[in-house]
Image 1 (cartoon, rainbow, N blue to C red):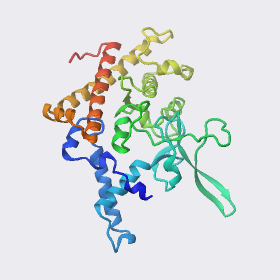
Image 2: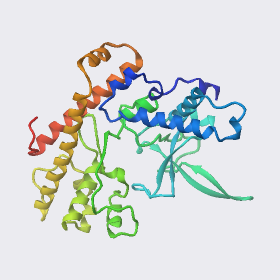
Image 3: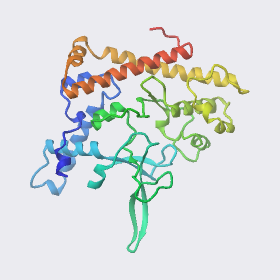
Image 4: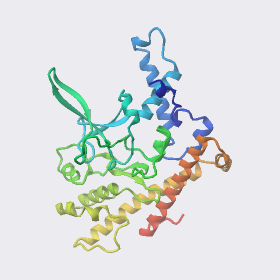
Length: 335
């Protein structure tokens, strides 16, 4: 544990005012403010703890504690609230087991397995535990699956954990527009229909993009289902068309009876994606000066290099997104 506390703080906890300006306009621009508020909350809560009565918690200690949480917390699925696909809510939890420090992590939930809250019966009664449920039969002695850190883009992981992954399926972005016919109420008819397509969480309607500007398939699927539900063109048989619901860019011509509704839905979704990507593209351009850009482009400081990479990759991603949207259909904007 001494080694854990000896680790340098995650980048987001050590940013200077100059470095904060470098990520202005990015999808992680507000992360430093959010994390700073968490540090202040730790300091405030510590004041009412008897443990710190004799020796009050210092700000440096609060920063160090939050740094450990950011680097080492894991996503744990809880049964308290629903989330896509599992009916479970994912919460970040710090598990004080040194053995877990050596276990690999990966942001791809297809390669990593989240921990789940569960309970077992012991001689003294029911006991709460955390379990990792394998997706296949495993042999004794076989290496356990990677642990899942949570639903973070590479921009978020870089600032929160100080690491990145070359094949992270969670794209850059974060814009959420919930359909008017969507509700978190599990007893509504639409909730049950959305559940058939893993669209029961707000995050399912979050625009996130691959480095090449492609939206996540889960967003496309859920946006299409929402469109058809709203316009009365939805059919229960859509559940047998998952490949078609996930397909983006959309096909040039649909081989379905209601091809016009599908085409119009795609046009609506494409316009929404284009509007978001154009707004982010402009924002990234307008929130940095030539002098700041030149400063970070030439810097060899590791954190500067990391921040400039975040900005450069997001700029490229949203530029690619705009180009893809225009290739799909008319978006009414040539800027």
